[in-house]
Every structure is written in C-alpha cells, then in structure tokens.
Length: 75
Image (cartoon, rainbow, N blue to C red; front, top):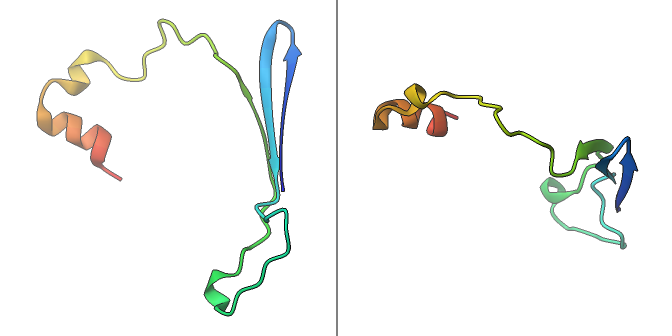
C-alpha cells in the first residue's frame, strides 16, 4: 500500500510518503525468491526547496573527463 499526502507547514509545501512495500491486492508466487517483503517506509520532503546558491561541487571538480567519471560513475 502507498499513501502520499501534501501539507503546508510555515509556508513550505511538504510531501509525505508512507508505504509498507506490499501491493494493494492479494498476490501469490511459486518462486520463493520473489516473495515481496514488508518494509515500513515513512518520509517527508520539502517540495521545490530553494537550493539557489547551494553547491555540492565546484567547477574545478569537473575539470576533465576523469574527474567527472569519478564523481558521476564511481558507484
């Protein structure tokens, strides 16, 4: 089941997501590896947060292909 709600708190719009990661209908599987597991998720985020002038990286961090690959592709 999934529940998504919106609310305004002190002038900010917040989105709350709540789920147990289970489908909203009966389900069955013959393969034990594919059994859906219960997972309780509940989190809130600010919608369209002002991130102007917030930098996580500088331009120098992306000065060449190798440094860009390290940042973007190093999983």
